[in-house]
Length: 118
Image 1 (tube, one colour):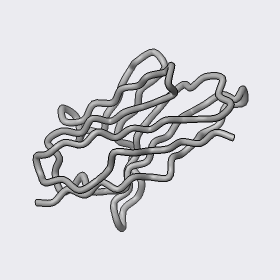
Image 2 (cartoon, rainbow, N blue to C red):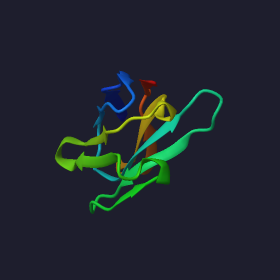
Image 3 (cartoon, rainbow, N blue to C red):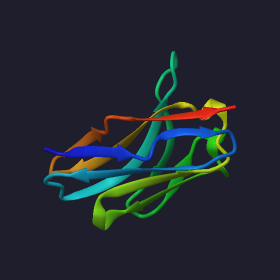
């Protein structure tokens, strides 16, 4: 059983910063892509950022230059540094991992709330 646990969400004023963390536990052989998604009230879940096992990264246009995704594969962890936060970044943030146990499956965290006040 693989579990993902997120932390680091909270309330911050516009222009502020937060750092989200997500750690996976369980019988994991390896993890390929790690990512962060978010879902605002009344909206569909959207992909925010991804990072491959080789370190390649991708971002949705709205966060480019403000958010940075990183990973520590030895710790089965992924991070999202969020700077210059805007009210429109308010959402529940979920981490996602494509893990091999050895079967490949998608795993999701429970979500962490990020609220940015104006």
